[in-house]
Amino acid sequence: MHHVLSAATTAGYTMPQVWRVLTKAGYFIGLSGAIGATVTYATTVRPALRAPQTAGQDAEVLRRRSATYLAWAGLVLLAAGYFQLAARLARAGKGMPFGDALAPDRIWDYLHAPAAKGAWVAQGTVHLVQNAVLAVTAAALIALFVPAVRRHTDTIAPTALPLSLAVTLIAAVPATKPADLDKWLDLAFDQTHIVSGVVWLGGLALLVALAGTRGRLGDGAGLLWADMWRRFSLVAMVCVGAVTISGLWLSWKHVGAISQLWTTGYGIALLVKILLVAGLVAAGAFNQFWLMPRITRARLADDSSSLLHLTLRHFPKVVWGEVALGVAVLVVMPFIAGSARTEAGSAKAVSSGSVFAAGAALVLALAVSLYATAKASDALSRRLAVAAA
Image (cartoon, rainbow, N blue to C red; front, side, top):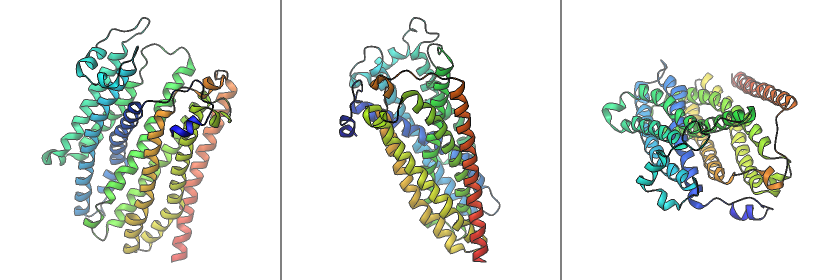
């Protein structure tokens, strides 16, 4: 990444330091584990485990693995949150060496610093509240290491869900009132981008971890997993739509011309991210148009062997690739700093009625496209089922 950015005309672009890359990527990994896993457990895993056709032993195996995963996610979130807080301190004001910013007393002073002139709240206070919520969220998840607590996974995971969402939403609270509508939209779309992205990646990671239990599942587990993959496909589709719409807004705000994607440091980092996300979408499309119809065909034909093979062999292999691409996206994120418009000397992006009209048309087109994708996948499933019959 460093050599690629150096090859561009990057006047005004500053390469992030190693500690900045590690702390920011680690923070997003922590959010993926907490938000993505709790959302996916609540929307995908728990409903499938409670289905009447699910064998009790299979449900217990997957519930235990889910609890363990969530507990580790809590530990990762706690560690990542501390390093991210130190990184914020290192970048605050005149800045300081990251090693010095790790000192608890310095962090405490930062969290209790008075508000800046013109601010309605101190930035440190915002981060104090955020990290208090982060600590509570992590504690709730880490408690799942305790066997007696693990029996209540179905309650704890949904409880931790809004808390984990609050971690990122509170951090976005501005210390000063946004100057105009564009600034409010920047905040809203930025959080939409983060939340939808970590739900997508974190959900994939949880399901891959759960697929590792296949050796302990019964012969009928293929039906259970077909239900889970179907449920998560809907979650992922919503996330794709949210990532796309919010990403288009943020890209328009910071990139003034297509050429800036390869002539500025910001643009190159963004282009790499776009290509990685395109790979994620392509893998999702493969799942939707190739694997899901075949899973449906095997389910309707009552072919337990094929169903088990497709849901717990083929599908996880593709998802592993998606997780790898997702982690690469998180590593690239710290390099997307500043603005390509600023680097290239372009005019600042200003919204207007025509911009909002174009945006509304794009949202409508994307919604129609995603709906058509779901319908096409269903039609293909029915066609394969009829052919098999």
